[in-house]
Length: 289
Length: 214
Image 1 (cartoon, rainbow over the protein chains, first blue to last red):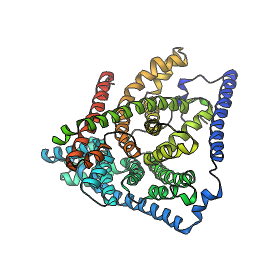
Image 2 (image 1 turned 30 degrees about the horizontal axis):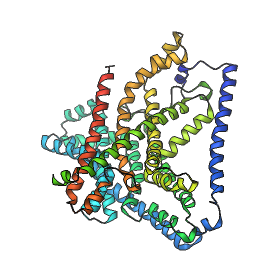
Image 3 (image 1 turned 60 degrees about the vertical axis):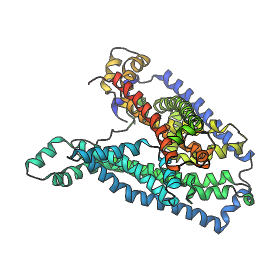
Image 4 (image 1 turned 30 degrees about the vertical axis):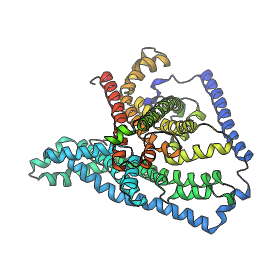
């Protein structure tokens, strides 16, 4: 916390501190009651019986889950591989000097950003009769690539104007200005936004579940609807959800780390094009230490 | 064109389904989002932790997984509600995390000098927030909330695969009737474009109305 955040509150006196502590105790009790209710319901509906969990002891089930996870990561890998060049291409197109190229790229990017991802995936899957994996990857590439194009464009535009002018004054051609001057500087500032978009892509691979692509969630569904294991739905969620959330958290954390590193460099005058998202205002001084 | 006119009532039902799903989830997500945002800046520590946990958890959960948990999981707790309500719950909770973050970063964009000046004029906390900070934060919040709402409108498409009547789900019925699959999807796409463009138009208007050159 920074010092400036104290502006909204007075420093609490003994009475206010006591009051806050009372609120804290009440809030804690309510939250604990909520958690307690969930745990009670879990036991009440017999979610922790051996029969519901024994599925995970079988090697076949473990392999099914791992294969599902592998398929999820495969779809994600292909998406990253294609979406980044797609984004770069259309960002370059939108920054082009030629009006036709610019208009066309703008049209493509805007269209794919406005369409729900699932509609595209279903269209590719149902109407074009493509394999589930490639339908999923194509949809993800079109959508995330378009968003990445906007990120790249914003990054390049956020580099201070003087850099570009200086490069042109040195006699560089526009491709040289782009590759030697603008992109390397934009790159560092854009990296957190790019990784955040990849988190979105990773999350959206689970849409493959809806077009029967055999990914992680699909594997979970297969186990959860198995009568032999007494329909172990909640146990399956308890296994799957942490893995998904863990993977996304790991990527988000990486984005955060990269962002902090980028901000530390004093040489970056223009500042990152993304807004700094830190809690500053509205926190009481008691949490500032 | 024939695909649209012949199946007008199916499309119209789907369109209305998507629209109502969007409207109810939008209200839920805005209310929850503001509530969680106020939790996250409150001086009460358990509430802050709860808010942070809520946002971190929901922002990193795939929406499909959330739907999976809510629609198929809650009935295991003997909670049976209509599918529409389940879908609203999933969409609303998921979006509330993003609304919360937009609100919070909006408040952070107000220069701290504004709050300090208000305090030094002797304004109370309520006055500082209500008269000085929030009106200025509102301006920078409109645009991000707009994009969150557009994302919500697009996410409603997922509900169709969980037995809720909405626009994308209409393709099954129309496909069975033997209409051209490509045109079916073209009209579905047009329906979504109408909704998303309308939302962005509304928020552009709002943004223009509150915009002040600083």
